[in-house]
Amino acid sequence: MTTTATPMRNGVDTATLFDTLDAVKTNPDIAMFQFRATNRWVSGTHNRSTIHGFYGAGQELAHRQASTFDADHPEVLVGADNAPTPAEHLLHARASLGLPAQGDFDIGEIDPRSPEADRVRSMHRTLFGGRAVVAEQEEAIRDGLCALLELTRQRRARPESRAAPAFVRRAQEFMREHHHDGLRLQDTADAAGIDQFRLIRAFRQHVGMSPYEWLTHLRIQRAKTLLAAGYTATDVAQQLGYCDQSQLHRHFRRIVGMTPGAYAREVCR
Image 1 (tube, rainbow, N blue to C red):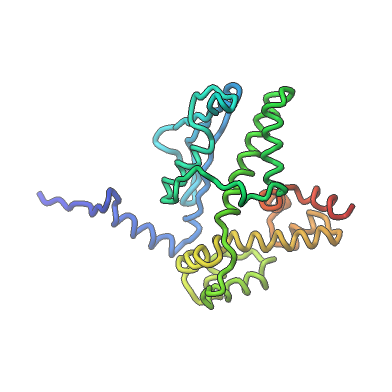
Image 2: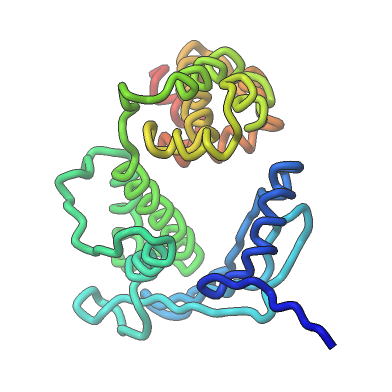
């Protein structure tokens, strides 16, 4: 009986890896993944997240077994120290991705007047003010952690490099001209004259973010201009090529720190 050993490198099935890469080149949509977690408050600053199902390769999938992760704060931060802090969970995630796992963030690089900083302070006031109900505390924790993630993303983002290859500039110009269309990564790559994977790597190296994230920021900047001119959020979503207003709302709040409606009221006062 003859057996063929599966080629492995550092514990990775390389044959399956290359087959997957070929499949993604043929159908990029199967590379879209959405990972989910459900979270519940336990007590004080202690909460627990459960991870089981996720979406990927065009279908709903599930891990072999559900996993739970607890988060808490040490006693010096008015917690019970039942588990690592949310920040330490983020450090573990960074280390898993091969990024530096350092916790000594320089607060001087964060603008204390930014909307994200206001959301973090609001989380602190809600949790330790002593008057918020459980539902309010849970919402404050979710919003505050999203703001913290946005702040770390802003610190990692780099300005566009003057040395960016010509194909990166072509891709940016194409997205500026067609930001209102339902662009796919393949459309932008074709216009730039480069394959999708090289385009993504070049954007991260020279722009500091992926092509899709750059396009999203471009659309939100355009949305701010339209809202200031008096357009409704529904009209803005349609003009920018979003399927519905909820897409605009989600990206606008993540990047700007407030909803489109709140922004319109603020600039039109």
